[in-house]
Length: 445
Image (cartoon, rainbow, N blue to C red; front, side, top):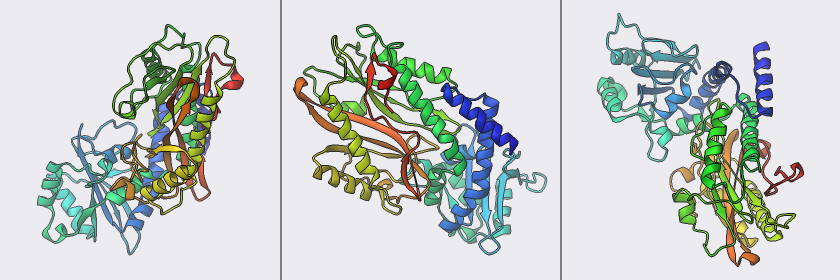
């Protein structure tokens, strides 16, 4: 308990300066969280999905995405072929974590391969299976989720060849179990997550400031690389290169295809620009994903133009419409359809492309639209919403700016959490456009 308290105090202190903990402390927290997930969360998920044996395997440098979330912090990769077996006896509810490997896989999973008795690794796995007599053997194959499709062809062929004949018909896809493992957030993780999102917000605050941006000199490319360096210098990593783009009073229309499929070109930032950033950090095996806006004041201007404020408020309203549709058991496609219908009724030209968030940036779970699939997403969009899951609320609304004689899109993305009490933002959301130069009172909340 004392170590846990120290860890949380250090984590909180690090968040104040948007600075990561020392690597050793990070590793201890990762391993504590992993132990809880393997010992408490996983057996309950196996029971709920009716899978009594889950086999996860990978060879070094070709790791299954699921296996990567199960390795201890000290393991950056699998070793040779690493095979993890999780078994829950449906009658006795006895639960086992076994590593058919040459080593213990950290403190959480003990090695169970007697190499003297079974010189061949596959024979050791076959013995584990025959001894426990599972009814359903889950493996990671999936048509809809790359996260849950980590068993490679070679491993699959060799696995099926060694499997005793009476068990071949008991092999099933562990897709739902795998997705639920990835999407579920524990209470301990949700104590940590606000610090990550807060750190992301602080990095955006610092980047959208006169300390970084000099109008007429600084380019969007300069700011992108500043963000990338700041993330690294703060002790975090990122799962994608930050992008900074501009909408301004010119004749160039907003091109949604270019916005989502091509990296914005480098532009010199000038007064009157509406800036947009898309940024995310990776830390303690969790990920953030945030998009916010800033406005560069023109000479003589004291505030953001009212038309831009109104456009921003419309996207804030769209966020509320979307999260108001969150109900356990509803699919991503049902939530999308309901939100778009309500937005249309309120006169909002909406595009919604919200995704689960957690162990990955674009994570496993119910997909709620894609920018080019507003009629629903087959497969991952049919997955139901579960409690204790996190989401990147990503969307945009289109508005007319009369003084620019053109339409713009306010593209927002903020990280939230859904549980029995409803939806909440993990560490607030942007409610005001950042102002450059800006006093502290104008910083978005």
